[in-house]
Image 1: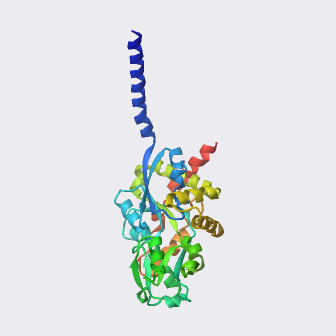
Image 2 (image 1 turned 180 degrees about the vertical axis):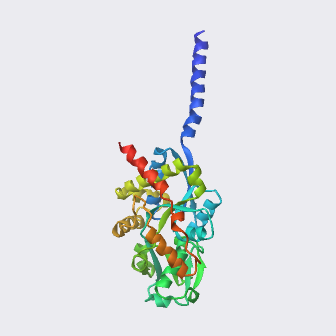
Image 3 (image 1 turned 60 degrees about the vertical axis):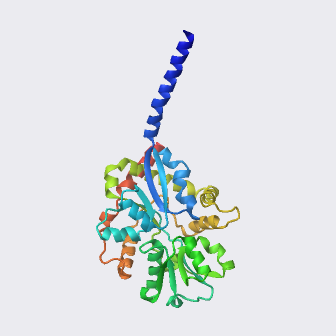
Length: 331
């Protein structure tokens, strides 16, 4: 009799555990977020997931990496992502053609990007006739390269663009002499001198209004998953607030995500450069003025034919709800 009661008790515990598991799984809603593959800014990008901030807001985040942000946009429009982060270039181009994409927050308003060349290239004018490494047409490296050429009053027809994949791929292509110049993130700056390369120009000098990273969602996702969408942005804001105040944690996470060696200087360099240029704003505001500057730039470079209605392209509701959630959580 005692054995029977024990068995029934154990069976009850097992059934309770079985019924609890689905509830716990249900509480953590899946949110699929895309970004460019991990590099030396990964500590900022992945903090929302690895720092536990998404789970704190009830989301089980799936981070999906892409070779370029234009590919992430395609995944968003195909319904394979709930959000992604990248340059406003490709989303503006897509929106001008009627695509359902909205900017919901911009956490990296300062563009920490450079044009890398061999040391013997003395000026932007010398880029004429050279092969320019980009990632893919319409992605950040391509659009930034065109912005630099427009600043220097050089026609894009005077250079040849070559798709070279990631920042690392483009950096190696310049180093090997396969291409004459490359648009890359500034993370390789500490390594350039020993490779016989240099920064020809920094985005801060020629394109101070160029937005680097904003977060995008489809209008459908915002309408059907409004609470989850604001929870994700709330998690992002909290993660970025934490990251900006915790250099060691950001550098450590970056090296973990990129499998970098302990003596690799790039993660530290990126963090310090972000602070030097105030490149990240954890509150994720969207500057309509900068967005308008960008689309006017793309019209000048021939990427866009007509401007988009920024009041429709920018959705402030998600961020406003997110900030309200964070304020209420403090009470």
